[in-house]
Image (cartoon, rainbow over all chains, first blue to last red; front, side, top):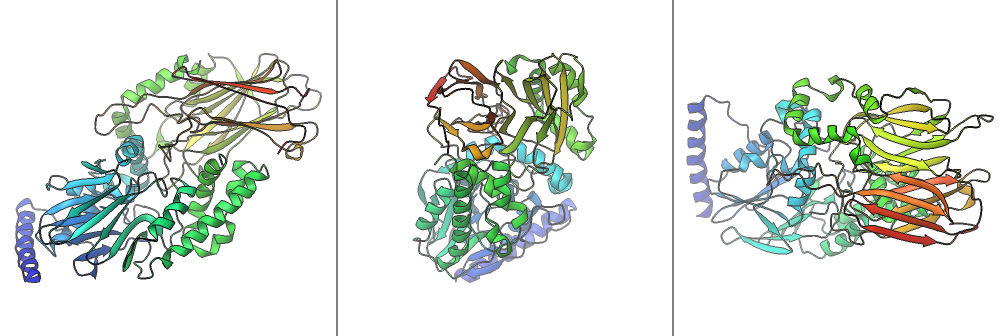
Length: 314
Length: 275
């Protein structure tokens, strides 16, 4: 019955969307490729790459969950176009209203598609620290990514802060389907939020979990290691990392990231103890991990820099 | 005081017109197409004085790529040849493309022997970075380097805005082996958000007020080693590492002031061996 509703609704919605496009003379928007990883839970897997003109910012994993009454969207992608394509993928599957747009943290690859979901009546949700983080970085992100991605990819991108913040934990009812949101202490960033679909046991870990793509440290290395311990206790049948493949090996899939962080912390602590300056420590720490990750050269020295500045205060 | 010099008036103008300025940058396609800000900057900051080539007398060291836009290490070093009796009175670091280009001025105490200074700066964009040394004969000498902005989502902002312990000071005296000959190295660390005032709140469209470390003074005994004028371009938790030749075993004293007129002080005994 539920399935029939979805199909019928989707058909009507598609038809009306198509009419609207024809009426405005626009090119139809190609829906983003998504996989239904559990009944009503869809995931788009972004590329393992930096945001570029060529990939149009499509590097982060995104998702949506369809309940009886509405849809919850988890991250919106690296451009408004990607957000529109995600919306088209949702509309190809359901006509139910988009109730919630959840940003797992502040980074552009996760929030630049927000504008595609504006004016749909959805609540935007984020970590209690997300508004501050976007205020501090938003203009820089817009300027910097206009240079990196070009005006075309950046068309329409604006910073849309959450309309409701999550202080600790919150449950969102999608209609016989509950999403559990949890705000974490500083880890990948100081505004990481996870989303668990309680019915299917799918955990959207945001960038608290990287697989294959080297982890990126923009918060606290000590915090992230501690958060990993707590995160591992959340029961999940499937986990969706912010970057990398969906995995059923939970919490074992955390292990590689934990090893990376522990090696980096050990190396940086050792270099600090020996009085090695930051500039050379950043090039030396974490090198054991070099062949184990994609994008290691792009991010490891940066991670070591951030870890050094933090661990120096221990 | 850095805030009062003309180049920061320029920063103020940019702050008020960021939207328009970003629009210009977009229209031109890339930042490199914009005119070199240095001639005007140099003229304002150094009041039209001549800046001679300093490549034989001083050096600036920075990584070619800013790995983390919020924490870019920079070192300035006096390299005066043997026989040149002059000394460095002050180093000024200018990050040309930053909203507030003058990152820091390091004045070296009249009898101090500070020969190299390292700190960490925020770098907003692809930029030239200039170091200017004023020598004891009053002449100015300049060297420069170029830093590529970081890629990815790295921003020149705080990583953990919930950090506590404002004003906590740490002083480290490094083991002798870290510096050559009679020189020693020491480092002052200051827990401080060092917030840029150029962060626009996307909701209110207002800029957050700047809040940063304005001065750092370091003495050994009664002898001033270093007096630093900071800015918003200095990274969160300002960190200054310097080499010096210890003249005696008197304790170190540090006094820090910030733009809310808070004062933080610390005193540490001289360590013969260091850590």
